[in-house]
Length: 229
Length: 229
DNA sequence: CTGCTTTTTATAAAATATTAATATATTTTA
DNA sequence: TAAAATATATTAATATTTTATAAAAAGCAG
Image (cartoon, rainbow over all chains, first blue to last red; front, side):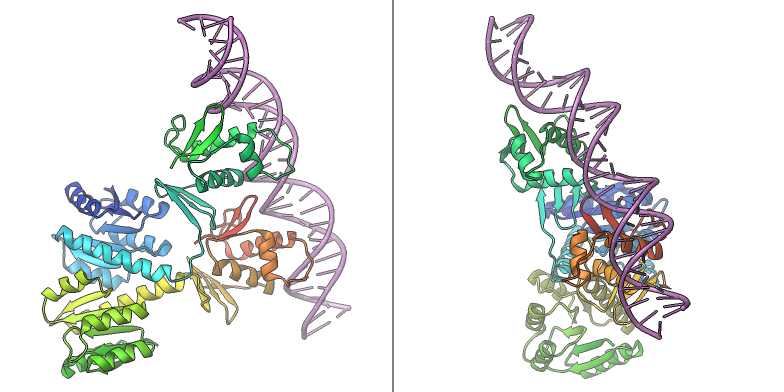
């Protein structure tokens, strides 16, 4: 799944871009201010950013600079003034592309695709050993032991991570608390299976939108738990 | 040193491009035919290719396709016809950029620089065993065994350097203390993994701004350590 | 011997895991 | 259908584990 963040204060333009990109199966989110856009760019896990230059608050130059300092993802800068392009280049901010308004949406889509393809080409070839499980917005990077929900990283503890990873790696399979305990805890550890319940609750608190109506880990009454796929 | 190959049959244009690029300290070579250009592209080790579409013999489309099959280096395609750009895109040949003649030489230079910078950025950061690792202000020169934080050199001892280098060379990967010990200490050395902890602390004291809130080496409780990328 | 690095040891501090008690929800049974 | 029985959810207190820190001991090169 490819997530794109559009940072653009003109809502109609942002909405238009979003529509076209979604037709090409991208997941698109919009922020209207520089502050929010910068914050989410750094915190969440987007695959590409479309960045307007003129923004209320933090401007595009500064956002580009800060994002590039932290990440290598493609950044496409958008500006109404043709002169700005030279300025962006001159500053060496590390933007990957520049478009002047107005532009055709299909042109934007073409460029987005090209940048993502190149990014994949250049980064994937560098032996990536990360084992990743991804189901409906939940992404588990086993090597890095990171968990993301819709791109946002969640901090799980060791047992929480192990338990979630076990369930997510065997989706659609119902495990009793005893089975979960045997699989995740040490063989010889004598313990109460109530601790499984508590951990499930904690995981839900962290990854579920509505913890009392879980969409990832389901309770099967009288039997155990199941990761819904 | 950055080597560029220009594949272009109009000698005057090729010469002009070469002149400008050499002013920016690139090493430039020219081929006038598709055959020779393709052969050298595959055989030699260029950092970027500027490729004219209309060529006697093998045309630009075919050259682009074949080079891209073998290498990831940036390819800038040049054409006299604006319509060709859509065609190149449509074919998904994996060209990195397109320019229509006539274009200003400074424009070309700017694009060449941008593409090389991106290429370096994306390939160097992908955990390879480069001699220099650079992540968010931390620079490790493995050959010289020097460490810099925001340009300032820090004096690390042998073990500290080895441990930091190992982690930074495999960023985003969580390693247990046992794994770190096995990888950095001699196989047969019987030791306490507590020594890993102590070294981590010492490294943090030297490279972190706030040692108790580390931004390079993270602690993954109950599991080990991870170099944050 | 001397100064530096590395390792060990002990203790403090931090984070996490478990237990236990209570509340809530679901199923069973009368 | 209501009460009882059972299972899970929630919360908070307690226990355990893990790591950080500091300092001493051991090792080592000049």
